[in-house]
Length: 336
Image 1: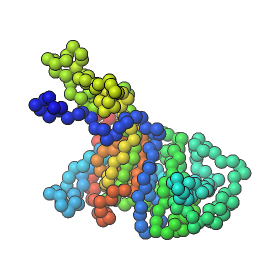
Image 2 (image 1 turned 45 degrees about the vertical axis):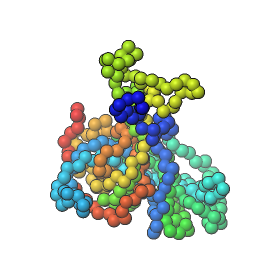
Image 3 (image 1 turned 120 degrees about the vertical axis):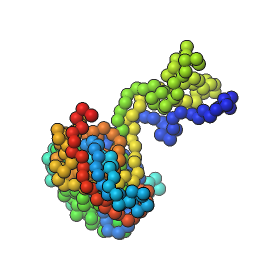
Image 4 (image 1 turned 180 degrees about the vertical axis):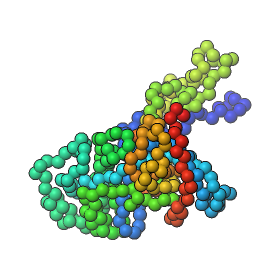
């Protein structure tokens, strides 16, 4: 601001405008990475359990703590097996990808009828023949999966329906791989490695209607200036003509936004929940009952929120070095 002798930058980032609620609680993946080699699934999904801390041996070559024991904040994500109930083939058009056809299995898992239903006379054979006949035109293949939250530890039964891309060098091999997964379960340990970096997509905590101070970090007005107009307000809300400026921090709904965190490292992929279950269970979650991931650092969202896990689109290194996890805190977080 030119009339002030000190710097007064605007408060609040415009990076995430407009600040609106997410359309869906499961998160939406708009971009998938391109991978080479054998066909593989590029994503998974789990449920945020909570946070704890772990003692690991730092294996970053350029770190001043290389080779030493360090304590890291970690987040536990429970990843029960996902069920592949179908796959979908896409063709590329002038307006983007268009569905060619989709094939589904008739043998659905427990509680699947809460999320979807198939007609009794559904026959996948003609659809499969159509896909095979147009295999040369297929641009992408994605599998349709059901989460199985009843195998997790917090009591949910209704599954989520997700779409995950399958990628590889050869589109025919990708299609054959998708066929081989039909009607089977997929586990996180089959897709990821310890030490690998992944992207995490989830919806943050909802905080309701908030003012400009909490929502944008606006400075509270001092007692000697504009105190008669309020303290937790913006000094000026811009000229009204020709129009109000949308960049002015204003009160409104805060939180429940979709966010993507890039290159979060997997410290451990576990199959024995007793290794990380705290006494009394995790706060607002309970006891982990199936496979889990230990993610270095924090993860957006409250406990029980679905977290989508994706191969990194900004991969920094192809080399995967599994860290050595010495201990995970089992101290109860109740009342913390």
